Length: 289
Image 1 (cartoon, rainbow, N blue to C red):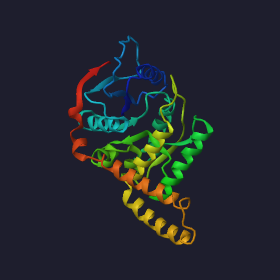
Image 2 (cartoon, helix red, strand yellow):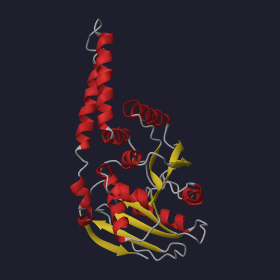
Image 3 (cartoon, rainbow, N blue to C red):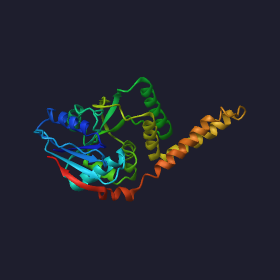
Image 4 (tube, rainbow, N blue to C red):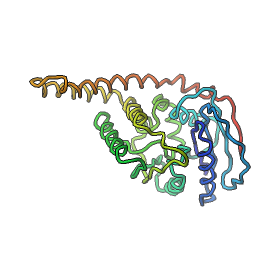
């Protein structure tokens, strides 16, 4: 069974190198053929040549992008490349910095036989960030549920069937939000517990700003539901505060309008023409192994 591990990277070659070593060290059944596809998002730091024995990895390719396009679009480009250019059974997108723990790949592969042909997602049960960030993350999930009706407890780390990959590359939302798009196209996903690990080197890149952008990007995929629910909230809230109208009581309305504006702006990123032409952004393909 051919498994493609898809890793986007921007400059963090040290972490990717350590991740590949740890994937190679996994005791994976011989029934699985593991290959790695790295999407280099126009890094400004060159990768150092390494002579390592990677006996448990069948092949490694690096797709070198001409123009930096961001994490989500690197994954989208990688999915499109794999679907159109590679032979595969499953694709595992994962971060290259250690926060997606390589040992959980084994659990994905173990559960393939139990998933009845469904794609598998890593459902976050524990995170490694500080308490304040974890509280904000729970608020993000609650707000997303409130305005979209979707309780999304997973990120990019997943194990996608070929059928799901086909749906993903034909869905324009994939160009903007991986988890939002996957929730949109697949109503029945098989989940396994997943613990958010710590970065191999340096601090986490998931800042409060990036968490806010991540949350709004997911909601932009379900913007029709968001607009309907927001309209109902505005009407009910105005009726509730009409006798107590003030600058203070209007703050929730201002925040909601800002949210709607941000979601509308992010929705413009869903460009199917750019997605369809994304492989033209590949400048070079390096075969490392």
